[in-house]
Length: 162
Image (cartoon, rainbow, N blue to C red):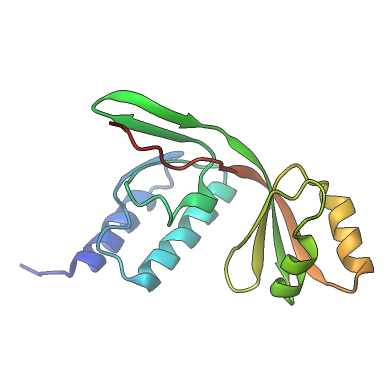
């Protein structure tokens, strides 16, 4: 029999789960055993599945790795719902100089939070108007190559229970 590393076994299991192009994907602790590169690749796969309109349900205790991909969150404790957090509007930007764009956005009306999203991306949370924001960035000499409204991200990820 062939013995695979834990990370490679996870990758193989994920490949087997998506090969038939299911409309809904159920994953239990999918990041366990993955190295940083594997985590990054997994996040990109989840982003692609989401963009294709797939529903992905993930059971995990590692919420930080998935926070910008999550539309809704349900925290269960001993079979009881302890916390449910709905999504909020977000705008994903791809920019030549994301650091300069982030500095420009901080403190602007409607911008609640700005986070890095990959090497040239930013996730802007809050009820911002995409057209006006991109126009303001252009007028400030900051170039954005892509702007897309996302389904949202979760406001609260974890609340400890007694």
